[in-house]
Image (cartoon, rainbow, N blue to C red; front, side, top):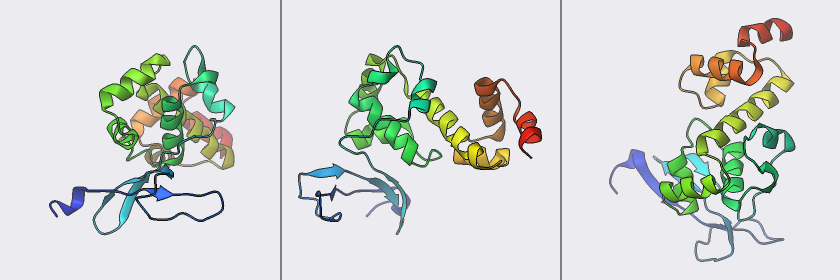
Length: 175
């Protein structure tokens, strides 16, 4: 079986209009294909829908593209995966694999929308940060982890870039 810590399992889930999901990989009408690293249990799953939903308008406002309202299907799939996935584990090459394209092809397709993976990731992080803080204040360490930052200081710098305020200043306002 090889290295159990990095075993890659591909599964196709078929969804019909009325029936629940089936684990039949031979069904060609699959709506999404999760990619999971497993060592006996599913640790991470990335599901890409055939027709991803339109992103929230607030998120589109954060995307710095000439025509953010008319993004390509590839860009919408990347946004959907980042909105619904674990940002600490999703990488551009993981999304490229799930789309069944090379990382170079993914970069080229996103560049047609005048976007990069990093721009989309930053917009999704900002959107998810605002969503979390709209509910209640959270410690910077927790937010940094939830948003996929390796270091808390990276989150603090990004927060200042997004808002113009230090995170500690926001804490004083909210707590």
